[in-house]
Image (cartoon, rainbow, N blue to C red):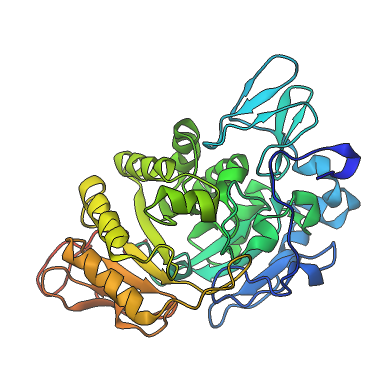
Length: 414
């Protein structure tokens, strides 16, 4: 595919814009990027009582006068040298960010479409190039054992290093940076906006944070200086050195484990399973609070054997206390021929995982289901009651069950 100036992408599928609806995460009230002007970007307030214009707040900041000038649309403003690559002869480079290890010639881009080789120097084109920003409940990520009831200032840039056929955010994840309206919001301003909107954490989400790791790292540093945590919602498809450098700065991580089958990863995700499993093991060793989401797709990854194998692997490699969310599939993007996941299928998956010994197994995208709640693994009483993204009751005291004193792993209070 030819881009402006004759630049070429490498092994990247063409952008599909046939879907008129472009949700930003399941259940969000979002605006299609095709309806936006060049001077605006996606914004919504996803919890009751949260309202306002994040973009307007960013523009009026004296710390970010660039937002009121044409310079905000200058691509050079979003360009910074990449941190994870190897130089090769003849101005070629090898990307060392994700397991693809794209070898990229001069004036070409890697698979993700957001990194470009310019005369043997590799650049990210999405540093501070925010195409989506929302104030979300942390439960929407979903993180159920991390600051429940709190808000996360959530942001994204364009791009992804896989191409999931079911992606609900395909309009930004499968786009090149120049195809998506965006605004310049540098790391310090990200932290300021999180504080302004009373968010104790910044969440890197919606598209794939792996591909904007440099921005993520700088924003996390700025957030930590301001006393604001960072959480990442990721596919986990990242090399070990980049993982330790980028996600080492995170306070919590949610990994989308797409399936427990390499063939599924190859056919449906255009990736590989093993690097994601390696990421989960590495995060465990790094001591990062981690939760796992498994999107249950009817007929493709919902077999009892696969679910059982997944649960056994989690128990053996990560322990029994890692929260595992089985989430309901909704047809979208390139996978519209399958039905919504039946609730009994999700319930069966949960039963299998619990039978294997996992303590905290949830059902997602089914608001009001009892499996949204957190139960004490010893006395089985409800400790956190949820309905959708809303916390109705939170009984955990000092990290323990108030009834039987069983320790409940997680970050329950700021």
